[in-house]
Image (tube, one colour):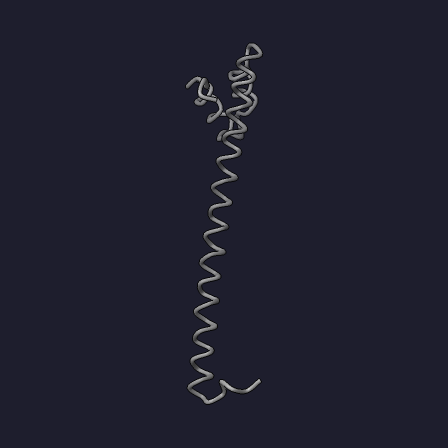
Length: 90
């Protein structure tokens, strides 16, 4: 994947970000041979993987934060129950 040319990066960025002119972008960035097609597909797949990883990292971070907040809430409830003398009730 290291052989992806900068013009494919630029054309794929235009193609991905410009929904209204997608036909023009598609014709201007059409690969001309098998190697170009391979590089183009690898670039698109890498971009998809990067987006997926970014979303996955965000979700994991949010889950970790939520777990921390739940732990804090449980500690606060336990403290309140102890202060109220309800800690031995089951």
